[in-house]
Length: 121
Image (cartoon, rainbow, N blue to C red; front, top):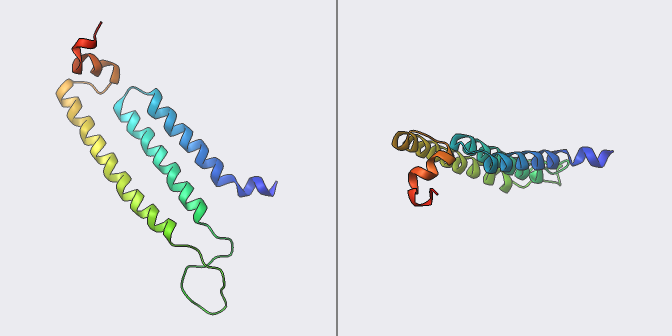
């Protein structure tokens, strides 16, 4: 039973990842696809945080009496990934706004005939 509790963060990662992937693939609305990508990104963040945890570890500041230190690299990677994720989401939302202004819709099945009229039949 203790092993299952220790694996809880990884189960959360799997559920979030599959949820984000399903939303990204199954939805035709561009905004919903971006939300799915955001959920997928959160699963990667949780995964990096989960693998960065060290049992009985302290921050990597040299102090007497501590032998086990946690690695700061996953935290740095997460900060970078959050910034890149927010920037990517902002660009995606800006593109969705421009597509809505240009074509009047953000539904994928309505956009295909508008952007590729030769495929319509």
